[in-house]
Image 1 (cartoon, rainbow, N blue to C red):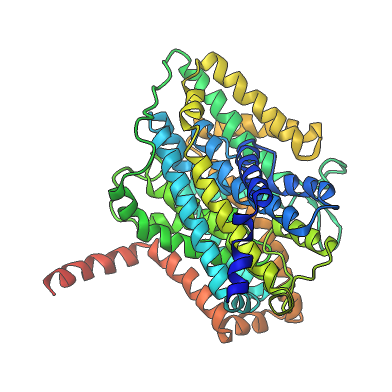
Image 2 (cartoon, rainbow, N blue to C red; image 1 turned 90 degrees about the vertical axis):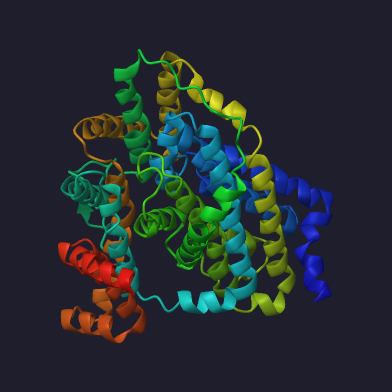
Length: 504
């Protein structure tokens, strides 16, 4: 017990480790805030610098960047409607409308506290239930991943705005874009038209920057005559009543984040979108409608994407399977340092497990400290004259798109999707479903084919397995219930049941 405690607080008590964690967290926040500069890229570059370091020093820096980077994407999502990372897409849906009303300080303060809370839940689950959660995660078969992707696609209903038909069209368009490139299983070319640039597919990050950032800058050209909204920054830290009100929702969406984060091949982006959809379904009569600055729309994705960080470490440390792209890089770093993450790590190297738990906790606390400072300076960005702000957004978008692969083609894609997003918004189409489609298309495509191959290409066997497997049956039932909840029959049943409940 005493040994575990000493490992847990090692990074708290050693000045070098404390400093490295602080530098990593602060750097992660700013790297995450710049579109195109991903946490995965930052951690990958760091590996080459940390070859000769002690493993604890290398881990302290990488953990800090991971924890800070996932949160950092929310800054530009709220202030400029440019999500710094895919995990912040859902944050922009209600965070940016809040900034447009002059509530950017409140939005950043709430997102920071909820990110801290979600991160803390993820770390607790990592410390207390890692073996249990990892055993649950490996129960997922390709068929279950496919069902999970189908469940994700149903989020189109939440992201469609006023017209479901337009949302479905945009989602289908996103899925079509996700199929462009070489087939990952057969290497056949799909919709490449012989172009070498298209063989790697369309970068979801370039598409996201264009659809959210450039399109918004073009749209705001219609309002150049309007003065910038003065931001209220006198009340950054959320009130106790707000925290009490949103705590139950934050707990629910943090649980979603941990589970999705623990599933290999998923990550904070999918967790945040599913949490946003969950918030929309369970919130009765929000003070402000979703999509127009609802605080619930900010609380849910920010809790979930940071909770997914702790979740992603669970399969990495207990099974040797990375939960997402960043943990895939970190697992490589651990191998380089002579460690072997997997089922025996907890027995052979318990110090490494408890050091990681303690260091992530420290990084999460530092995230709260750094996240709540400097907000007044950040909010000044959107008070700039629009003639200065919009060229700045375009410049940031170009730099972000180019830095993905150091490729000009990504810049052209980004600009093209920016123009497309402008016309979509002009004619009432939401851009969120397009991004959702391109993110989930690969997950659905790969796992559908793996599932059907595992059943010897027999559809009856595939559907029989869906009913007989308890996990698949639960996911399938959830999909059916979600579909039913959108029909007039469900609404009629609810209306019929409400008076009876009232009388009871």
